[in-house]
Image (cartoon, rainbow, N blue to C red; front, top):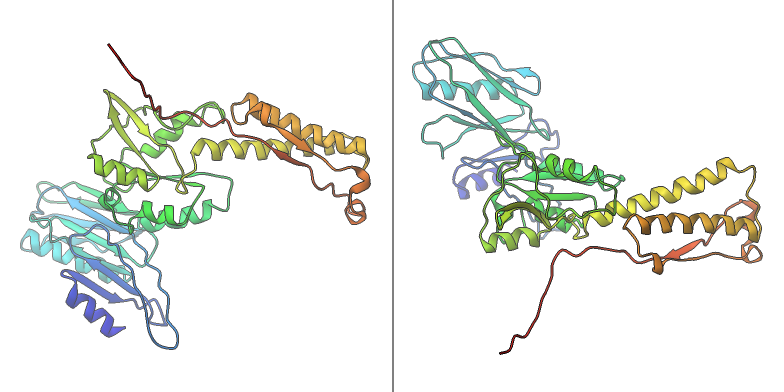
Length: 389
């Protein structure tokens, strides 16, 4: 592990690697590359009788101070509720920034703090923690004037964990990211990761001002607010204009790359700001996922209501027909809601005499089956024509 740390620092310019003391097995490396808000990192182990696997996580917080520190300034940085010992102005701005870096690493032992080499004014700190994410703030007092500051966080690791959890729930997770690698052809970015996981319940969004940035546009919230008030089946998620969200420009290649990763974008077409695509990470449409969730919920509700309100549903052909009729009624309602095609709905049911005795003893009615076709929606139109004189 020590050799690996040394080799990374030797080969990767600006890399600072720490073998974290929180891991008693000495199997965890914290990697920071100066000037990078986030790093795409992978590790492959080959040869030997067995090979260790690895997991890379990313969560970097950036603090940018507006002007240099001056005599009398006192800086307090708070990380996840813990206030770092106040750092007083020392000699000059650069020395004070170096003191602030040292003090944070001293008080927050899981932190790696880097002075961002890409900031020629030396006003930017990059903070990495051996945690999922950091709630960071900075307050400057004293002196004739005080710099303000902007805090931004890369939440890639948080997004991955939230997406994995959401996949087990009847929910949909929306996140936005401004990381520029999403616009590229590579596959190490967060949108590519979500697509590779084939997640049906996570929606990736690219926006130049995203959650974690100093002034986020909150496109994910605006999009949800624009669409969730409408019933499932009544709308798509593409071509929506979002209140309070600014559109942005993309090259043709960037647009293709982002949409190819099943991520949404917010651009202007013919002077109209609008969302493009509206898919979950797996490539399914958001409105389809939401519509089928409603069908499932309504089926459960309708069957349960019948069982609760009836004194008894007999295990006879008549009782089976009642349950099959309830299923068909829900599906017909879904057709009226714009989710299914009415004419395509077919419900089949068993005869009581054909149900196995074990199921009758357990009072389980099996094999109420249905098929139906989704209504879907039109979001692109291809027109061909011939004009003659």
